[in-house]
Amino acid sequence: MIDSGAPMPLRRYLFYLEAAMFSATAATFVFLIQWRHGFNWGDEGWLWYISQRVAVGQVPIRDVFSYDPGRYYWSAGIFKILGRDGFFEQLLANYLFGILGLVVTYLAMSTVGVSRSWRITILALLAIVLGFPRHKIYEQTLSLVATAGITFVLASPEKLNRWFLYGIASGLAAFIGKNSGLYFGVAALLTFVFLRMSRVRLSVVRVLACVSGGILIGYSPMLLMAITLHGFASAFWHSVVMTRNWSWSVPIPFPWTSHALALHGLDLAQWRAVSILCVAVPVTYVFIVWNGIRKRTQGEQILALGASLAGIPYLHHAFHQADFPHIAQGVVPFAVAAGVSSYFLWVHQRRRWSVASSAASCCLLLTSWLPMEPLVQHLRSRARAPQSLAKIDLGGRQFEVAVRQAEVMQVVQNIVRSCGSVGGSFFEAPYYPGMYAFLRTPSPTWDTDFFWPRNDRIQQQEIDALIQNRTSLLLINRDAMFDGHEWLKIDATNPRLAQYLFSTYQRASTKLPGGFELDVLPGSCAQEFLKMSPPAQQIY
Picture 1 (cartoon, rainbow, N blue to C red):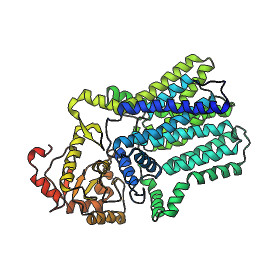
Picture 2: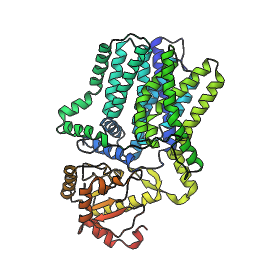
Picture 3: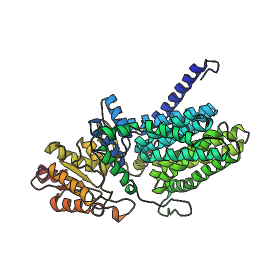
Picture 4: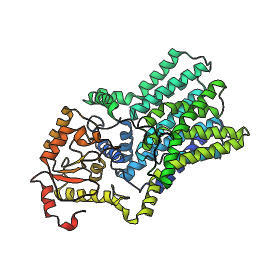
């Protein structure tokens, strides 16, 4: 495709064009075949809702509980460009960001000499990996950017401008997610230690100055927000303090500890593949780094080493709360390391080993990811129960979701429409923020996630907000929890708020599936509407 006889500047631009074209094609294909399937009104809905609020001028963290601002401003920017803010546009924004990760990975593969056929194969595999979880493409993409960035540094570590550029990328990563910024920093530290162990002479002071200066520039949007937006700095500091409470430990599903007695068929195969992946990923990283210390790393091996050094810090993200959605966010560099290592074996005439390693890694990744992809989930649901799915409009486009979920959403929408969509009149708990985005109404409270333990001061602020907004309709699931933890129920994490809700609002007679209930404020329009609704409109 690229004319090797073309002038160097033109050849460089053609490489960029090739990378963008193949990356966009791979990501677009995965997006188009499955965008309409499923809607996680928890995590996906949270991203969609906050992006909507940012698009109308609210400030993340300060005005609404959220992750770091970068992803929301990216999504809000895409909303502004497209002139729409539906769930389709949110997914499109996610995939457009994912394309950036594919582009830099493709360029890194080109730079170290990986052949085009292998580049395209690895790119296709990465596009599938980015298909789940859809709301965490940002973390997955950043891990690919870290991979390309560390490879960029390793290729010429004596060039301080490369450390500086990597520092800028680290600051931008922290603006999107403070954990990713930390992982970028740890990867830089590991790279410096590796180079010193490999007897590469580097000045600690100069490298540190370059990386730190770059981080300040990359992180400048956050610093400007802290300086110019009233109340943002204190809200951000509170979010930093809260970080240790944002997740809970889940045991790593190693093959010798995982229990899958209740699983069978594809679910069992997926579980086994994930358990093997939990061993294969760290072992691969350690072996590549150890081999790089023993021997001089060059050519395509530099990218495998860069992926390993960048991937090691992300293992914390994967293994702290080690369910597959978190594992899927944290082991993406493994696909690059394994693919490039297989290519190295191929070009050095060890083709049996190359075929075996590439087949094993592809099988492991595809068996882990494909059963979780929205399209596969949709097909499996259709096969088990053709009537288990229903269509619902999410911001102007039809999506297929579980029929029970669609029923709950439709009932709430009917009440809100009949009573007039007044901002703050509807409240959900403990964690269905996608309902706000679906209804296009703001939450009456700053918080939208009541799985997190809150102190009495914050709970009282939420109660005051409900009173001030005259919130009249609640959608609540009292027994909802994660991973079977009783201490994650709303009456355990937010007892003061739960007591207010259960003592102030009355449970409606309308029956909803899945443990959901509607609670109404006495004398409100919502209560009168439900009294007047004929039984045919009730859901049993």
